[in-house]
Length: 181
Length: 181
Image (cartoon, rainbow over all chains, first blue to last red; front, side, top):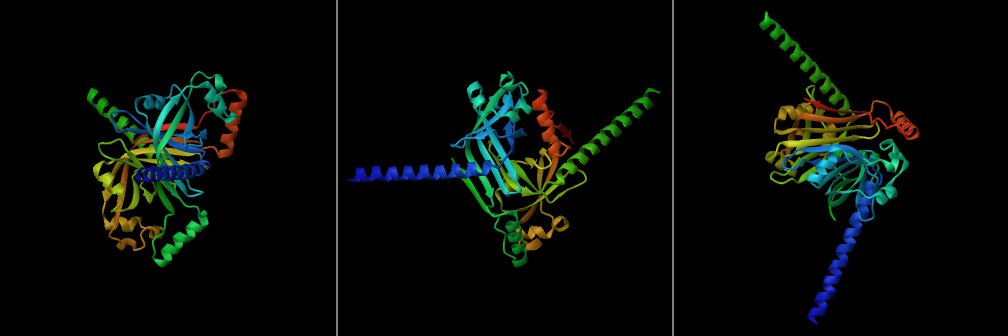
């Protein structure tokens, strides 16, 4: 029956999309896990002015959500209150991995979540620990991820670059992809 | 005479500003010179959509101007034609230096300038060399530079962080400054 076929086809399509989404998120997690410091980019509302600051990624969840600790009184919190669109840039020269992540930021003032994400290294920024009243979480849900990835080691890439120079063939800059989440 | 005094005072002020500007640019050049790959961030006109891609900095001039080679047919060139405001993010984890540079981009299609900036490593992206018709330069004139700099070595920074953890005093994250050019 046509209806049955249509239902089956739709199920297959949805499963395929789910599978692709899972693979994309796995790729994202794999690339983020070596990143200690990223640049978190926010923008002022009604202007095109961007601002960025280095931030340490506290955690990336299995669904790609990223978590950051920040001072509640900081300017970036004000900016996020005004405009939720943020970007995250990562540069990992040693593994030749680069990410440009676009997503939506939410401020999460949940002590239980803070407790879950807390690590003693955060004491460097929050000496009062979890009792610090000037502490909040930024949760970033990515909706677009651009990556430049060379799974080959730096040396191999250099070799490839040299090969391109010698042979006159264009250097394949490694995989460049856009992940839709 | 009052006029003489005023003239002298203005001269002193201008000299002081010049000196400060030169020191700021020196600081910028010093921080950029170890950076091989930065993230060049452009924006679509009339939307707040950003895009970023890793780019190799070909040169930084004595006045802070930064130069990049790019394919004339690339999307970023289109974006720069529409909106000249760009940002440059650098992440140097090993020296604990981070820069967020905001500036104006210009497309420079000058073969002499290309010749001046050319290095054989560029053949990896332009196997045809300087004869490649699909080549242009992006010139970025910075007008605001935010930096996070720790001139102490990574180990010392780690020690400072640990000290902060132990003593309960807040970790001084190193110098953070905003340079106006």
